[in-house]
Structures are given as structure tokens and as C-alpha cells.
Length: 455
Image (cartoon, rainbow, N blue to C red; front, side, top):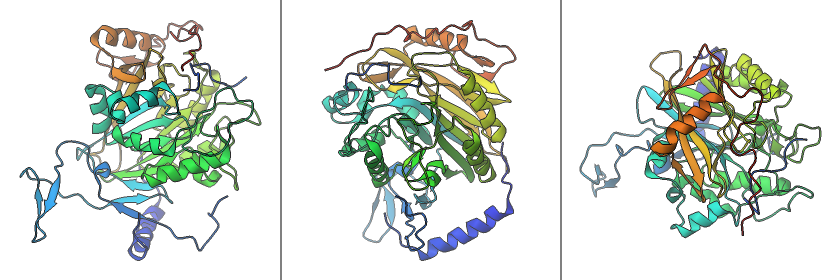
């Protein structure tokens, strides 16, 4: 869908490769339901700072399918498969946290599969974390096998990380709900095949700037890329670039919640940490345009909307329109803590909200969205298939919806969507017909739910 436009990119690649040769190689809920408070120093200029670039060769950065077998090295140095099956060689994998450029091996040579989940919370004392700890301390046990396989088998799996990792900081004064997770909890992300997280949300700053800075170092320590927040506005605005199957996928994170001048979740500045805000779309359009010029496919992961409402706000639509005009190829939304509809804007799919994915003990509908990209063309990447997978969150775990609920959730999602059709298997396509039947009413099953208090 996108063509690499600048000759300078080729020159930059050569220059970057030269640098590589010479550099060192190293390596909720606190009584929380769904009625969260809603809308009503950098080293970048230090020329002496060392750019650390790693090449990773661990399980996390090889294809996540069973086709890659464990290997052992013989005394002669010959590498053999532990189960005597032939394996294919894996190239060195780039992991550059400074420029946010990474590479992954795909399960298929002509497809790239990316899956997206909504809000996840691992705050101390919440039902989700308690469930994990009671089930062998493995987050994979919070999902059924079918749903887990979608996540793990995707070439890239992304979710919204709705809290900071820190033992420091202090809860923001006057904020109704504040979340914080112990840094050791970050390793749970690896249990479910997570490849990248968005920090652009209204809870990453709950314990102030130091806790946010701790989050950055915690995620870097486990080799987990993140978007949407940073030590300064330059980092917060920087896309993550994945090189996979010879193509470059750009992922951008931004937040539109807290629509007032002095929000609780601070926007990053030139000298202070924070998030990338996009209520005013001036900066995000520039970020998208830059990403379009340097990639084959641009994804925007956006935090927006009204909590417990499946109605799409006018400013969500206008922001999505601006993003598409700037060059976005796919828009994924979160924040409402319930499902919102799907639309196409100038041919670009927009999933307004994926809802809570693994957030608390409420029983509610949610989803996993999976896109398969066709990368067989020399100069383009196009969407091959797009799928909405109905799921149910309950009791601190999430499962793919059983047959008895599958059709019900798809029917509901179709009725709150616009120019998008969803077939019985969840596959989404652009439609010439507006399917929305809300008539301006909030029809979310969560709209009348009382706030849940958990011990």
C-alpha cells in the first residue's frame, strides 16, 4: 500500500550499517470497575551518549510457530536439531531501542500477521494479577489455548499497557483511580507472546514522572518495544519500525483522552517525560507522514473515546480522518473499556475500541483483532484479511467466545459498526452500506454496570 519514497532511505541504511560495524553489541484495580476518571530529563542532545544496538537470538525473536526447533551444538561446533528435524537458519535480528528499529522473522515468507488486544492491567492486588499468581505465575494460563495460539503465532502481537511498572513515585493527588505494577510483572508479557506495547493512555502517569521513567527502563530490560510515551517528546513521538519479510511496518501510539489544557496524564515535552497526545492532530499528522515516508505500512494505536459507551464521538471520527489523510493504513483504538464499532475511512479500516482484554474480573465481551498483510509485491504491502475474534473476559481471565456467544457478539459488533461488514467467522471487509443501528444511543452492555469493588 505504501511505496518507499525517499532515495535518502537507501543512503541512511548504508550509513546505519556502517555504524553497526563499529559499535558495541550488548544487550484494577484498586477497587476498580469501569468508571475511571475520564474527560469532563533527556540525553538526546548529548553527542557523547553511546548508541546501544543489540542482535538478539533468543526464542522471543524467532518465529513463534512450532516449525523452529531447539538446537544443540556438538563438540565439533555443528548445530543439530534436538529432535533430528531439519530447521532453517535464522538471520541476526536487530534490536535498536534508540532508533526504535527492530527485525523479526515471519512464519510465512509472503505474509505478515499482526494481532491487537485492548486494555491490559497488572496493577498490584487486582484480580488479573491474583489469577496469574494462583496459576503457576504464568500469564499464558489466563487464556484458553485457541486464543493464546492466535497471540503467540502472530508475527507481531500488540496490546495496551494501562499502568506503569515501578515501586516508586506517588499516586497523583485527586485522581480517582491510580494503577502501578511491580517491575517483575513485566515478564508476564513474554508469557503470551507480546512483541510491543502502547503506553499512550491515561494511567501510565498515575504515579508521576519517575514511575513512568521506571516503566521505560523496565520494558527495555526485557527487550519489549513500546510506543506513545517517552523521556521527552521526541521519543514519545517516535514510531517503532519492524523489518519483516523485507518490508517495514511502522507502529505509532497516541492518546486523545483527558481533553483539556492541563491533563493529569502529562504530555511529554522537550525536557520532561510523558505521552504523545493527539486531541490536536498537528503533531500526530507529522509523525504519520514521517512514518509513511519510511515504511511500507503505517499502524496507529490510539487511546480515545468515552468510557462505558459504544457511541463514537465526533472528535474520534475527525481524528481518524486526519490520520488517514496523513498516511495511516490501519487504526486500532482502546480506552472505552467496552467494544466500539468498526468503520472504513477512505478505504482504511478503523477499529474504534477493542475494549478490556484482560483488565479486571468483570464478565464482558471483548475481542482480538488480527490482520494478515500481503507482502508479495515488490513495492507495496496490502491487507489480505482482517478478522474480529469475539472473546469474553471474566474472573481475571479471557477466552475465545464459545459458539453460544460467538454469533451474539458478532451481531452486536455489526450493529454498532458503520461501513464495514463482519461475516459469521469474524472476517471484516469494507461495505457500501452503513450497518449502524444505534440511532444515537449508547447500547453498550456495560453502560449500566455498577462499579465493582474487589478485595
